Picture (tube, rainbow, N blue to C red):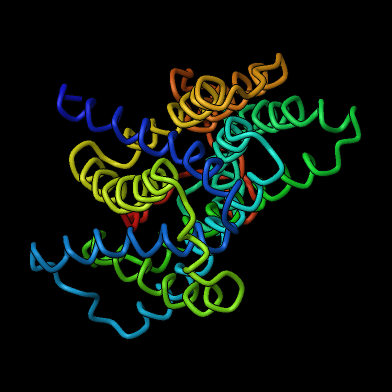
Length: 318
């Protein structure tokens, strides 16, 4: 990986990791549904502008737009809202760590829905270690019978599952078109979904009382953390491939935890640090990083039977 590519990867991790801090700042004053609506609007402005300036073609197949509407609901509006809602109950650092479980959910779902995926000893161990990290992270809330915190934890895990399902759908059904055009359409559909909900439950006029700091957080969340971040994400996939780009997963929770402690004086307890380490170790194992061939050998295919060979990989919709 070149220095410029690594710099973009690091910047992407810092930007996405900071999003949890921005959300926490906003949900203290405005409803999560308005936070999400504004975030998506600002992201759409960036992505649509890129499509128009670069003259990128829109998807040609009619069926693609049906899947993009589904992705706008499942892969954008739903997790964005669940993340913002969860941060009414839990710290931004905890949210960042729990959201890093997305690769674990993808690993589970891909076994059943993608023909080129398989279970290996490393992946099985990684799933166990990763979800043990979730248990450790949430253990304090469970022992203290903190129902609000447990509810926030549950919302974050559902958001991660939603992202995982969306990733599977994208890989199976969104191929052959320019990824930035697909992202622009997906976010546009999400905006169509969110606009009537925002007008019904939290009119935009409620944002009039926000401070300069809060407006800065909102604009940064939308323009940088959504629009520019997705542009950088897809650029990295084209430059270094999807596998290396997923290394950003290791940066997000660390940034989220550190910024929550630094800027919001959030508690940095032993369970948060231990859970973070276990989840990152689980992700590394699921991605089969630095493990021997013996630990990467296929065990079960997507139908639950022993694999003899691995089929050619389906191109990802990146």
